[in-house]
Length: 254
Image (cartoon, rainbow, N blue to C red; front, side, top):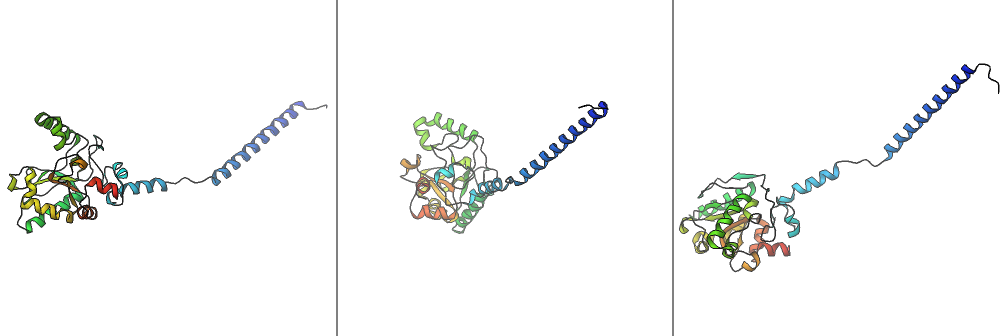
């Protein structure tokens, strides 16, 4: 083929190639937009639902032991010699307990409110209860356990004191209570006092259980502690009291 004006010919060919490329690119972009619009849209609903489920754990009562262990904020979290809390765990809703006590101490807000009601009920019976020890951090428990081992020896200490991470006090749901009748001490004889009898017969009405009952050491791992109250909520406490269960037994059968 004979081209009279080569310069013009090459210019026309170049422009044609540019046009083809632009059309091709436009088609590709349109196809990409259509594909994107047809793709499933990812939303935050699943994340939100999960977060809401976690935040509601504290009010659940239909929970198994294995589920409770995974969430330290749950009212039914199981803490014992085989299940431990992380050393950095501290409840976010701790409040100072505004009740008579041998020292200032803290509990989670819901447990503190319930304890105030329990103490008020005791007052109506002309009984005076005193707080002795509520929330304890991992580090505080570490020091206390070491002191008990030094004083009593390993075997005896393990019956009366929890290793760090294995103490219910770290949950912020446990309170040791005492009375003037036992010189504000923590003694088994508290269980035979008028105050101790009141606790035994009425604590469940306010959502508390005696966590380490008499003759249940084989299950709980600890000696009888009539002073150690654990908040679990009224419904659970009532069922445990009615059936004479330990917390471990309740979680196993619930």
